Length: 87
Image (cartoon, rainbow, N blue to C red; front, side, top):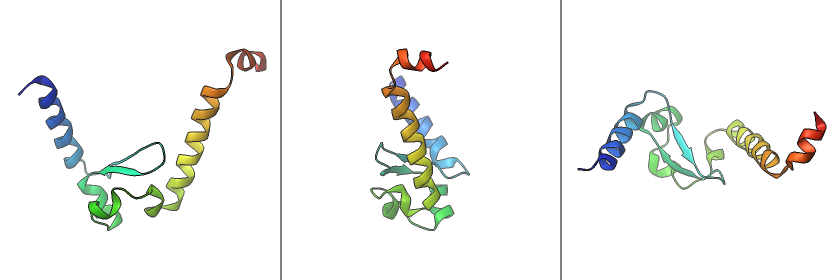
């Protein structure tokens, strides 16, 4: 195996062995992957979680994603000249 494949296998092992739930979502909040602990934590098999919006798990996660996304968008949309003028 090459170094990339070894690294992927190691990260997958860490991901699956973590005792805390780990949820990977895309920019729209769609769950792309969950680890084994997530299924136990929320009581859904991973097949039911992956492909759905993260809001199915907990309503406050949706609020958090919305807040973080809006902050990221504002940070990248705000021109630097106006940002420095505010200081």
